[in-house]
Image 1 (cartoon, rainbow, N blue to C red):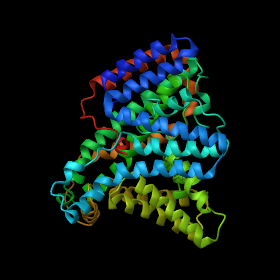
Image 2 (image 1 turned 180 degrees about the vertical axis):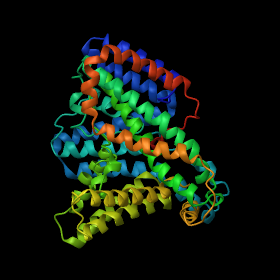
Image 3 (image 1 turned 120 degrees about the horizontal axis):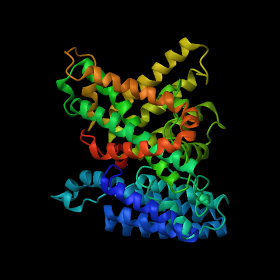
Image 4 (image 1 turned 120 degrees about the vertical axis):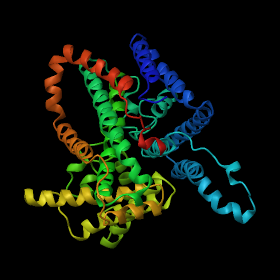
Length: 452
């Protein structure tokens, strides 16, 4: 059930109205039922599979919290990783092995990857580790199931840890201010997705499909256009998810803080997909030794953490290269001793251009269908041909992406203006939401991070 469909809008409105008219003791159960319906609407088979995985993880979490046994926690983490690896990489491995073992049609044995498996696997692992550390002392069944199933965040995050959301369950806060903030986030997310991300995708997709047909101008528009598209697409989803959670009385963590205003890659990774960055830092980088080891080992730890981030996104060589590039970026900055703050505005601009350019060119491997297409597109940057894309519109949308981020940095000031005027703001936003979902004519693309 797509967030951007009218059927989802009806489902959400009905869920919202029923939820706030129930006694508090029934609300958690209702949200679990609504989330089961939402996931089951996509695939009853995947729902059954997901429920089994949740039940197994809950049983393990209870035992880990009781015993604080590191071996049991290691087993739980290993099982979750093996589960992810099987669904994520089985088909690729099968394609390699099939000819050697005489399988004529490997497609017969292919598996379908469960929806949101990458996100919920990390969430399971974080919860098990939190139980081991004593941050969760007695897991409760209803709270744990809602923690994993809560439909606003299930598909593309943010990746929740116990301290982010688990403790709020059953303690929802109903307030007009919170609901106004929620509607503001939903409207902002829809604008990012439908007016910027989908329009950019529609305009630049032809370049990624046939890069050899285009020259330097179109290639650069596609490269920087995709960086703007994926930001508006992914952060737009998170805004919608956080907004819906607010409407139910819950607060989910911020996942983006104007990342394209960063002046180093280390800063950017504290602003982009913050919950994934925090997971990698806390559960991969720090256990490897983090900054507490020698310089050479620090470079190794950074590199490994980013490579694993790339592999988490997908099994192809392109995602591996994307992770390697970001590992190299971080290591280069560490070698050059790039400080947190530029000395002046000139160096701020120079460093910002370096980050945005390096980030955008690395994303070519993230977006391209295969390695050959990525290399071809990068090569076309040096081939002069007349620009065929809608240059003014794409440029305007890229600039608008930066304007949106600038305004997000001043979100508190905007909300300070909106909240006293919510009697006017709320009806306008509701009409805007309905209009965006029902009337926008650009072909709607699935949220990019749904595939992970």
